[in-house]
Length: 244
Image (cartoon, rainbow, N blue to C red; front, side, top):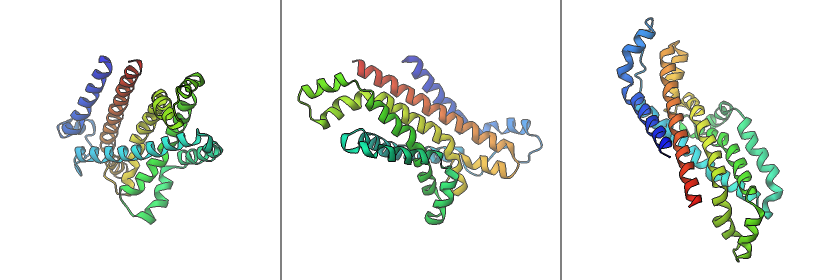
């Protein structure tokens, strides 16, 4: 537990140092890329870009978690079993359909901004959440379910008090996968006007400025490490709670 806490603290400190201290690194990038007139991205503060990036990932992850867990629960109930193939086909299509294509379809309808990116990221995050929810619920031992029913629990009580707590680690793992993947994918949101860490990357690619690309990519990677460490700590706490 202490190691997980240390990893999370170190990751947060590294991210904060990069986000707040990027201007201090300007001489370093000037030395690495002496041919560039502007070695540091200064169009927007990295703090604002990180906040926008995190908000987009968080909102899309929360939406996908609500929809995905609900769908996973529904298709594991007797009344929803027949819809399982359809749900799995839909979320698989959402994962395989390129987010850029979703943006191309959504922008003419919704306009530029974070909204089209939110739709694309939510669709992209559904598959691991739905699949892990189904796997977690189906992994609950039949003997445990029978014991719960034998105690007089109703189906809703069995779900809330037995199935979901036992399936929680697997479900959390699916949400973790979706969120970490979307940290990188959210960079494309800047192509439709959203303020994310993809902005310096896109500006750098368009302007042949590799320093901008490195700066954006490094902060995106640091943010992914922070979120991954956070989910590690959550999983550890959940495991200790279950043993208690």
